[in-house]
Image 1 (spheres, rainbow, N blue to C red):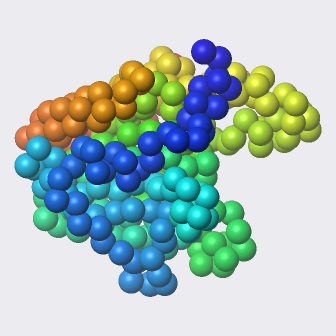
Image 2 (image 1 turned 180 degrees about the vertical axis):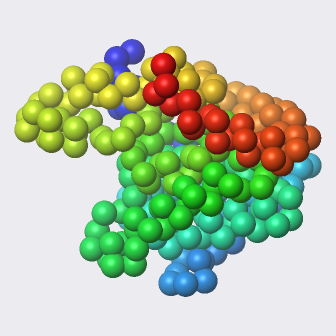
Image 3 (image 1 turned 30 degrees about the vertical axis):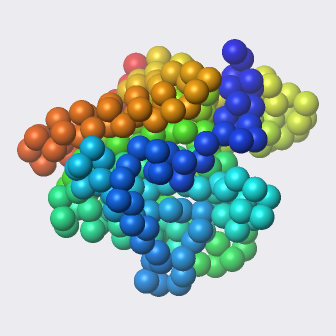
Amino acid sequence: MEAYDRLAAARAKGRPTGLCYIRNIFTDFMEMHGDRRFGDDKAIVAGIARLCGMPVTVIANEKGGSTKEKVRRNFGSAHPEGYRKALRQMKLAEKFGRPVVCFVDTAGAFCGISAEERGEGQAIAENLTEMMALKTPVISVFIGEGGSGGALALAVADEVWMLENACYSVISPEGCASILWRDSSKVKEAAQCLKMTADDLLRLDVVERVIPEPADFSEVYETLKTELYHSLVLKKAEEIPALLQKRYDRFRKFGAT
């Protein structure tokens, strides 16, 4: 499949959202609300759960299913309070020694005036800084779209995995085509140039693993449940200084070759 076809699959109506993964992979999920500064952003779902009996913190972008739900969730585009809510849960995970699992699916952070007034850029930057030094294992899984800093704010992790049809890029192909060529008809060329597919990013060592997508998504849930559990058990056994050094080195190597 070409890059734009992968993007279309990532955006497809009926594709499982973050809550679908939480409900099918984890047990005893208890959602936590609010950032203790402004409010509760419905575009980010966060809480504690069990993964095969292991206590974990789970954070996910949530786009919603129905039209009404999509509007309530702001189509998965988080406000500053959403990222601050996520960070609050990460810091609690660090305090109690729980690994963190993030599910990323967003076209990008919300770019409205209200978000800028409340410090969208600062909230994202704070997440990047804090996640790099978070003293607990972190794995992020791209399950759909991964757009710009809005996605990266949940993806400074020890490992980043992608579903076969997920995408991850600095800008949407539509935005790229408008900026570079001032021609929206070149969206397919832009998608190809951005190297945004899971296969592209695996070759570039930006992600560690690509999860196949069979027709039955229950197989994806089972695969992720098993692989996440085993990976987090191994990472929990590592000394924290070694874990943090590996996380730092992971990002420092980007673009080195």
